[in-house]
Amino acid sequence: MSETLVSARGLVKRFRTRGGWLGRSGPDLKAVDGVDLDVRAGETLGLVGESGSGKSTLGRLLIRLIEPDAGNVRFEDQELTALPAGELRRMRRHFQIIFQDPYGSLNPRMRVGSIIAEPLTIHRIGADRKARREKVLELLDQVGLEASAVDKYPHEFSGGQRQRIGIARAIACGPRFVVADEPVSALDPPVQAQILNLLMDLQDSLGLAYLFIAHDLRLVEHLCDRVAVMYQGRIVEQAPTAELFREPKHPYTRALLDSTPSIRPGEPTPPAVEGDPPSPTAPPPGCRFHPRCPVAVDLCSEKQPGLLPEEATHRVACHVAHETNSRVRA
Amino acid sequence: MIRAPLPRNLQAGAAILVTLLLTALAAPLLTGADPAAIDIDRLLEAPGGEHWMGTDGLGRDLFSRVLHGGRVSLQVGFMAAGFALLIGVPLGMLAGYFGKALDLAISRFIEAVLCFPSIVLAITLIATSGAWLPASDATRIALVLGATGWTPVARFLRGEFMRLKNTGVVEAARAAGSGHRRIMIRHILPAALAPVLVTTAFAVAAAIVAEALLSFLGLGIGPPTPSWGGLLEEARSHVDRAWWLALFPGGMLFLAVLACNLVGEGIRDWVDPT
Image (cartoon, rainbow over all chains, first blue to last red; front, side, top):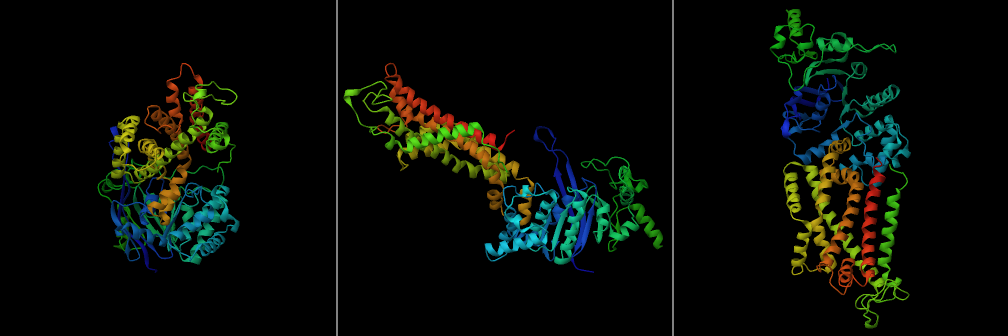
């Protein structure tokens, strides 16, 4: 098994909600509420959850694009959360992000060549302008864009091509870890497949590790080595992909798998889970999922389950599953 | 991005403004008359063949004085707007981008400056600055007008930076490793530039009017150098007999301010057609 590249412990991120009166802030929203997560070198870890589950926030915390309220993140042997701003900036060449929105994340006033060259300039990669331009052309070729793209503006490209530009920028300075934040969810299905193939090819040739964020389990099945399922700011289950799909242990994961949309067109997708998600500012006591859970017992509304067993490859945060596990072992 | 045809008001404003600037620059070529040459025999002559804007109470050629006055008035207007940008842009950027304590400090400072009626502040500064500010009259007035007129620029940029610092472009720049300076100058300022130009155009108009007012009060550029405000002041004592003395400088002032405002509105329509 390869070494751990990124390692998060006890991550918490709260957001102030507004809506209080006379500028008073409302209750805190815990977007990420005590998450431990490891990403190994060269692997693809899928992070799946409904919108609002905190998966994008978690992705940004791992590369310290936002500051955690508690917990820490290590990248190799550096504690990212303890780095001063200047050193963090210099470290950023090692971990990058591909954004969901290929429209909002590219500066409309910059030419594609400058957009892709920017990380090179910042991190002083390449001897001079000419060397950097060579590198940009190489990157364009790597992501499947014409060399003529250099002098064009982002608005001259389609969504899929823009996403390729974003990918070229992300890999420009040779990162080892890339957060892919729903990189294809804004694209049409045929384009989605192309972009996913590109991401996989790049992983093979560059040895990248991905945190692949998605709201669709189907997408991660063929892409990821391991999958973590997130619900309401916490990871509820984490396992090697094949095992998770074969033997999901958390009732929420099971519900997600059951709701995987039919391939036949026109057939409506069944709702993932019965009932409404709980209010994020006032989560239910105990297990966050128990009000919607088909197998909940009394304990579930009293005590929050841990993600167990600690050292196993397949971990689940569910009292009922823990009970079954220990009975099987006994 | 925007390749729409230039709006009419921008075309018209720019045409007037360019004409005014050219006539001001080329004043010595357009008129042979010395704006300061006194001719006792031809006092308060009505517009006619030789002096086609007439003459003033000392027999000086008004056409020549109006053109030369334009040099001073426009120069002060543009310089003052430049100084206002020089102070207002950095302060607004910093306040909007960093927020928190810095924003609080800068915002309170802006409010403190706003509390003084700016023209009274400008009068006080001009009356006292001659002693310690070693600069020509025009520069000194432009500096004072800039120092009292930068607050709208700062407030505007603060708002733009507060809005734009939360966009995907800025997040992407941060992820790439950009520092604050790079983010502010390369990624936010260009997006705020068109509205800044709009503000600048209005600031030029305001400064031209302010200079005229100061000169009218006798605090501007001193005689014999003509400026539009100074010419209006001179017209005051003859206004019952010599209408042309007030009409021509007043008309030029009106045209200059109109042109600046048209340009400002025009740029706004151009970049934001809604």
